[in-house]
Length: 415
Image (cartoon, rainbow, N blue to C red; front, side):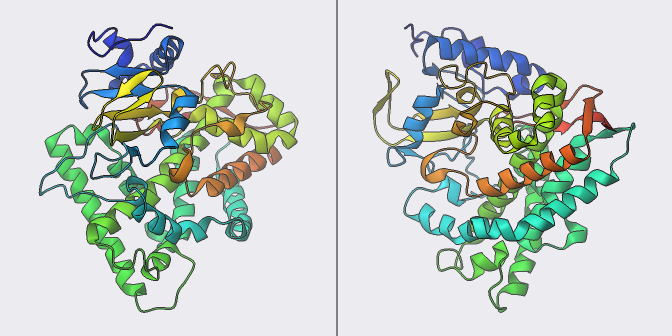
């Protein structure tokens, strides 16, 4: 099998898939780029990009291998963090340590703090309320009129869920969307003035959540995420930067990921109507279709790791200090695991092998909740025989990290 050596810089138009304009302006090309790389080998060197040099890891097997070796491939914010964009060190932009961007043992204690919010028992407790809110929202949608599915459905449902998890003032819940968008705004990060405004928005979030922390600090333990952090030895003495980082993690993890999979529910009807109709005709397929939808959409396109020592992956020697970008989107279309991976197929037998939630110690702590929310959305759409038609060009997020939509114009009908 041919490989592309780092010294040659061959085919940069294929290898620099992290450039965010591609994802916003020519998404089909991105999928073709990944397919071309998978055909040539599992690991490729990109010697030059706006994010510096990095390794592309594009196969399912080798992403699992890297994620399964957290002592060799670091997630730590001190080493560079979890995204293709490197951490910037300056006084105006303090670091945002969060447990997903920590290595063991610090990662273990902080993750364990919030895990009780996502147990099977807690999901069962939340189920009736999620169904009620979903049903009420779907019943409120206009029939036969154009509206933005991302705003009216995806954002509203996920933001409402976040508000309940934080016991956040309901009337202010859309602030959570505003802060989530600011935290992952790659376009603003690349512009000095916009980045200052982005940080002003994040400091607004810190002030708001600091007030909530202070209000609850002397109260009895409660099942909301803020109270859990207050009453845990692993998180009760967090620095302001750690508090900010973990808030960003929980908000982005609970908002962008589920929200973009819900938007994917509208897109698959548009792009793969046969698969959608198969699911609508047989609601017993819905649980598997949830995994298939999350695989197909892959709401976070990548995670980044940094090598702590020299190590061989996929026939390439990764040097200590080098950056690896683990392309979940590519792994979820790896032909050796998912034949016809660009197709949404609710009968796909191995849909649950997707890597959208990651693998190993950093696997998404809220995976069960994401699946539950999407499952209920599909069930309630089935009950109403809802058909959603995309009627305009979707506006994609400017990012190679968050894989989703800013706007998705649709018209909804009922059978």
